[in-house]
Image 1: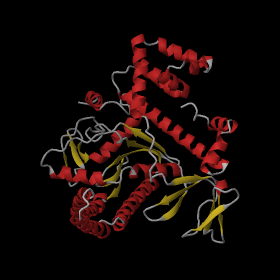
Image 2 (image 1 turned 90 degrees about the vertical axis):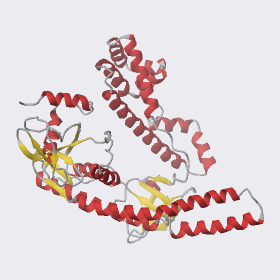
Image 3 (image 1 turned 90 degrees about the horizontal axis):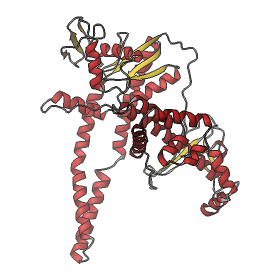
Image 4 (image 1 turned 120 degrees about the vertical axis):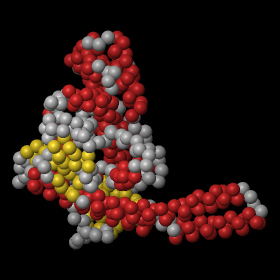
Length: 467
């Protein structure tokens, strides 16, 4: 945790100890290669630790048994890598290296709780760290990519159709041709990936969104995401209508296509089991039978279980859905001109169990499960960065079940896509638009935080009902 915090210190230590020379001699590459690899590894580990700290904060905030004083102590321990390391190992030497102001603030926070609470806070932090820690990926064929700094490659040719990358020999490069010209910047890091399935080399480059300088946001906007209509806004407008009509037939067609392949998967499993049993028998009959089964297995895998056609179908459907999403989001931004978009955080919610015999819920759940997870959130984040729009997540509990005007609970929902409802006071309304207004109101709600439990949210909403 502490060694990777500063990449340059770790690199300098390896250089002084001549360990870098040992790496270069053992693996037959240049000094700069292991330095670039060390830099990428340190950056990845630091990012993992930052994500781990955020995940621990969410778990602490959602735990009702942890009071505010214990939360403050845990949050302060997570704010600095040295304090977090001290909480895990109880190493006093690391604590002694900190500034006196940091040690004083830590002692004040520890004195604000009892000895039992302090022990519980440290133990709880250690348990959460063990629970959510990242596990290193084993070295397999999946590790087939390498990052190249801008000093390790160069494009050449009139149309930039050739790229030369550094090799393991000093001042020698390996050149290969590209299938299309290079249209991106010639600076920055590249990710070179070996695709073993397609037997080709791919070059990936991170492209940042270019901000629109002429764009000016005018209002705060709450949005509710759905399947029949992609986005319902607090302004009363809806964008991306007919999404279910687009995705529904595609999903059902893809399901039928995959169902036709299932018998071949079952037959392949049986053939592999039979061949495995015959491998231990060396009689002439067993050898002939094993060869026959091997031929049948090869025919099934080559003719009926090919992945190229399936991958093309899946890629076409994904591109069609992403195009629909991009068009709807850009249309919403152009018409609404928001300066802040408030949306629900649906990353940690669980679906309720479907009642037996309810065909509509089962079909909707199957469609939602086939949905490309995170596509809408990813495109929203991209366009918000491009247009300099702030994006905020709020608690999603009961946003579509209470009236945004009077606070009364909706009686029931109806309509083709269950999009309409009736309020006892305000009458008929669109529950998706009502939910978007509730989402916008929760951006400044001090009682309902992002991780407030759903039962507490319901109790708070019931108390706000206007008679």
